[in-house]
Amino acid sequence: MVDYRRLLNGARRVAFYGGIGGISLAIGFSLAIVLAVARYEAKLPSVEELKSGYDPPQVTRVLSRDGKLLGSMFTERRTVVPFSEIPKHVKLAFLAAEDASFYEHEGLDYFGMLRALFANVRAGQKRQGASTITQQVVKNLFLTPERTYERKIKETILARRLEKELTKDEIFSLYLNHIYLGQGRYGVEEAARHYFGKPGKALDLAEAALLAGIAAAPERFSPRTHPERALARRRYVLTQMLEKGFVTRELHDEALALPLRLAPGTEEESALAPEVVAYARKVLEAAVGERAKKGGFTITTTIDLELQAAARKAVTEGLAEYAKRQKLVPPLTAEKRRLWGEPFSGEPRANKIYVGTVVALDDEKGTIDVRVGSTVGRVQLNNEERYNPDKLAPSAFTKVGALLRVSLIGESRGQPPPVPLRLELGPQAALVAIDPRTREVLALVGGAEPVPGGLDRATRAHRQPGSAFKPFVYGYAIASRRFTAATVLELPPLKNATEPGPRRVPVRLAIAKSDNAAAEALLAAVGAPNVVEWAEALGIESPLAPTPSPAPGAYEVVPPELANPYAPFSS
Image (cartoon, rainbow, N blue to C red; front, side, top):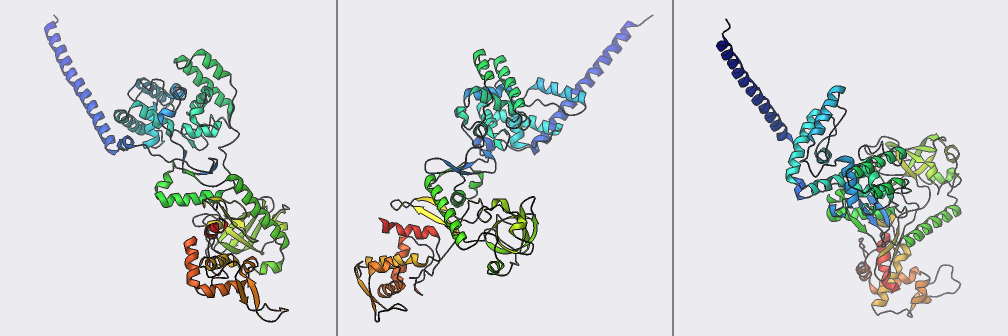
């Protein structure tokens, strides 16, 4: 006979101990999760800094006086805009494409995570993700892009932490300003400028949907290289917006019918003033130090682009005419090259001119390799229009073993050879134009050709002013009230003069003829220290010694130092 009581007691014992075991397993599993989370949390970065301000690398723009773009500086091409300035339809497009329930969840899409987990298990590898906008912000700001389960755990922990520290709008703002959208552009603002030639606040619905569509894979869906794929993604985003109730059918259909309209190129920058951009960088770094690398500044200069173009043309054409008169265009004679001296033998530096030896020619690539001291550099002959107007091949332009004058573009240290070189066969020039009333610099040209990173002779090349210094001698003499423009000076006779005896020359005529003897006589009369002090008061900052005589301009100054003190003469 079956003892049901005994069986019942046994079943109860099994159930009891089984329950105890199950609870123990659950507690153990929970404890393991807590310990694992604690271990990861201890190693995770803090999100506290985001509460005090978001400060990523941004673009610094240098503008002309009327707001035209001269150039830009950046480590990451990004312009941060306030969340309130991003149009609503742009925000909705990204929500539809990336995370439609963003404002409803607490940073994690649990169903999506489970779906991705099962898909990855079936595939035997990680093929799907289920990242919310919050998780993407965490991944972009705090974590590496590796696709591992460990990184996913960290991402999950940080996403929950971020949701507690920031509002939804703050998190979404981080996303829209930080996301990479292809071709070196970060954030909606820079992407809008690049793809459509307009600021983000001017985007229409079709453009917003296209940007949101390419966010998943910017290179794969790039509208510039894969327009069909980009349009397919735009269609997907617009459909999602319609299904989520973000847009009406009418707006959806209008946007869907529009063709792909891209800006012809990147945001237009002027090629006329690389010296101004370089100088602006120098001034910015002096003003804000390391903060300059972060960018985000807008620098408005006093440069007038029309005058800058005219100045550039004047320098280029003037030097070309000089080169023709002096026969400095190829082929150069051996006698002319010997005037350059011996080849350089040390370690070259950027923005200095050296004599080097040609070691290789490549007509197919159009290059000339030149040994300059301890390194080998390369000249792209096709870029040397000034010295190669007839587009000669390298083998017709020079030969191996010949000497060439060159300068380095950028530093050679750390660069594998060949480093980039520019030809420096003929003379150079610089030009500074200022408004004599305000002293504002209206045009600045640092050399024959606008070379980014090249030597800016307008602000860095110290040269003797020569006779250009004489007006300061005459100016102080008249300002001292001891002389006037009508004062007649008695000067020694000129060599080979037909009339014996001293010359009688009015100050006015001496200035017009740049008479050295007259300048030296006035300098002796008023005193060299007084002339030096007067020139420094007018704006010359380079050190001037009162002796020997500064009348011939034997001292070195940079062009702006000479242009600025001339302003009082014109006014």
